[in-house]
Image (cartoon, rainbow, N blue to C red; front, side, top):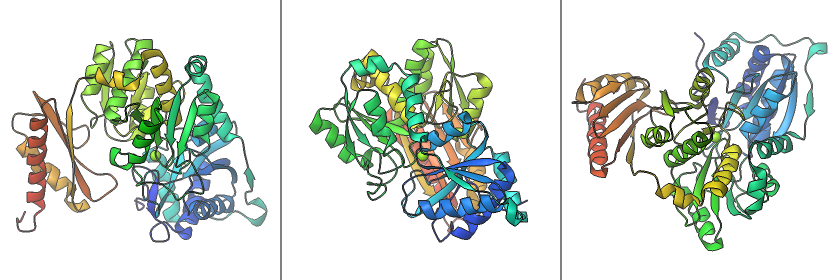
Length: 454
Ligand code: MG
């Protein structure tokens, strides 16, 4: 079997250490050979974007295939372009999403606009390992630029929501794009929706990402205070490639991904009663409670947005997403889309009232998240060991081990992207959630302690 290059979110690494021109060129040839035809490419705003994009493009052309360069646009804008433009066989996005600026990545998109499946990635890895024969000199591919993908994307989102209602509400938002791929599309979307946007980190020439890269609460202090000082109706923050979106309420409160997913699911179900919602095992039980109250059902999957999207297709689900701000609206497209999430949130505020009032209606759950360093070769042993310490819990093994108790649950799973083990513990009682997280964290640490031989 060929060496595994693709992780949970494409091939990622520190530029010129792991991810260099040679790897990018070779992968480009393999991607060209695997996809064939005309391949769309886009990138985020990282300093290495041009270097990696041109190396991958050169590989695709050397293998005899054409590149359509869409410029700097969000990942979901590339995905929509690939799906909707005839004659485009697939897409490649150059991004490392929320990773720090020294990273970049290569992410593949299937011909239908969805994230490439594991089988497609394995095919590319095998071609890379075998080496791809370059095309004869008179059959190499060419490159054309296409300038309208950002406008097409924004137009599509505007037409998917009740734009008239949003325009009539006279809203003001504060927008933080982390100086990433949404720097142009996000302000443009607000303009088309008649929403006044006060921008922060919406500069492609600004230093990416403008604040520590993951759009978590402690990284969005500037946005929170901007919302407070301007009296805006909402704060919107995207990650680097804008497939995700998180929100700040008008009173400056950060809305966790779990709460946002629950509110959005409830909103979608108010229009599509009885539908199913897909989310990974790591998301809060808040989603079940909200979805069931709205007359829907929840389907749980392993962690990873391609898994969620594929299950949504199989089940004909009305909505899906993850606890990190990734939301999938199937009538729009089967992938996470940060701009679509922002537009639907604006629509829900116009129809259902301010976000802080909506958040206040949710039941309260306490979630503890822990990360423990763990060598890759120890991950399965740790999991085996943990199986014995769950006590009265029922065990769900959809992804890692989920210990389900009467008053909460603990999920223990190996990280797919780092040498680390993750513990999630949830309960309506904060002490219970914390005590269980402590217990599992201590168990993993003890097991990995070199003083304890196994
Ligand atoms: Mg992302």
